[in-house]
Length: 228
Ligand code: IYR
Image (tube, rainbow, N blue to C red; front, side, top):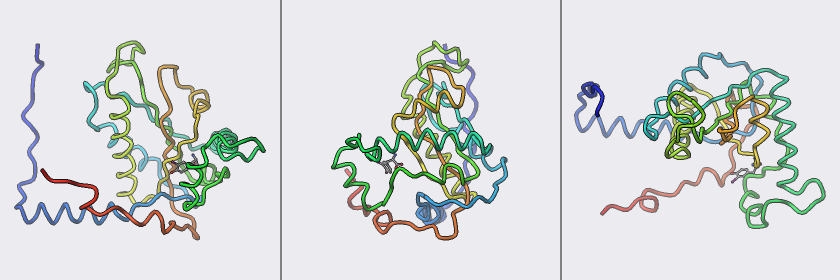
């Protein structure tokens, strides 16, 4: 049986011209976001992160089970532990332990223009690391058993909203995805039904921070859309 419904919240009564202008302005604001790999150690108020997580928590999701958890890491000790575990995984990924890299040659070639390697100092420098977990089960009550739906889609959208809100607040971010990320579950004390999806690193860019030329080239509208 359907529960009580509320009237749909009133939307602003914009003219079409205003809608176009606002969509354009939102695009111009979002297009200035780039992944940052060099962070300053400047502190950022916890409330910024709190609001960004609240914003993420409004994301559309499967059956409103809200299958996410955000573990916020701000202490130097925990950040160091994340850095050490992540770098150990990355050394295997890039083959810096002397073994054959876990990444394929094609993957390493794709990363070459970005210039990444196993060294991740920003995991200690940036003020906040937000470990994003996807709850495979749990439902609204987080009972650990009820089936969740569209988990990756839901948490992916929530992470997008988290990143957009942090950008709107004037912070730089990086989505960091060491693989495998099992160490994060233990480090954050999260249960087995939760899968670490990504770490969102947040803070201010370091003075010499750069963006690779490669990352600035975005596919044009004509390429990323078709109109039927
Ligand atoms: N997790 C690694 C590798 C990496 C993979 C992709 I796909 C990227 O877009 C960037 C990096 C690292 O962080 O270096």
